[in-house]
Image (cartoon, rainbow, N blue to C red; front, side, top):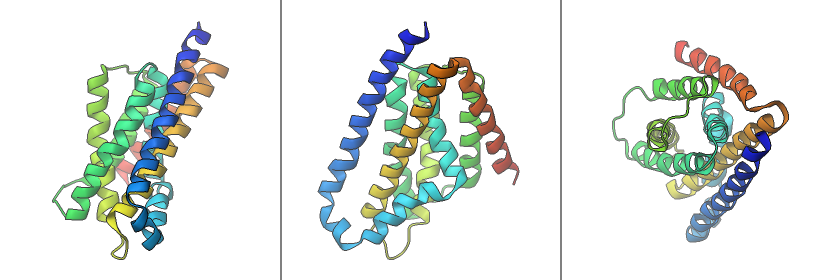
Length: 203
């Protein structure tokens, strides 16, 4: 039974990897002159999602949740998140007022971890809406913390690429746990992530 679910999930994961690669390549080619002139912005953007446990857990959760739900969600959620995150980043760079961003980031970890722990399988449009709201919060935080010397496009390419890689890590872990231990065992990291979200929310 598990084997039947793993094969389509693998195909979806490969499709996601290809699409993520194209996403990283296309803007990279379009902004090649910016990257050459301001690699610090790209590097800082790439490092930013990796430097904070809150960002890391949330983005990992998106991939893990997509892998748990299976089907189209394996690639639609991880692709939608960084694309919508760019919109939040633009809002942060522009200084658009958006209250309670840190609370939104903490809630993203708590909600996504809880969704995984309780094996919540909402309709695709609802799952995309949930991660879209949280992607705005994470993107806004990245944009608001943009170094003054960095080029916004260069910085954005860096954090979108890093985010995609974290999503892929979440997918890989989710598929591995499903294959090796059974799909229900994915609930365990989900519960731990939810506890992390609760910690960030309280502190």
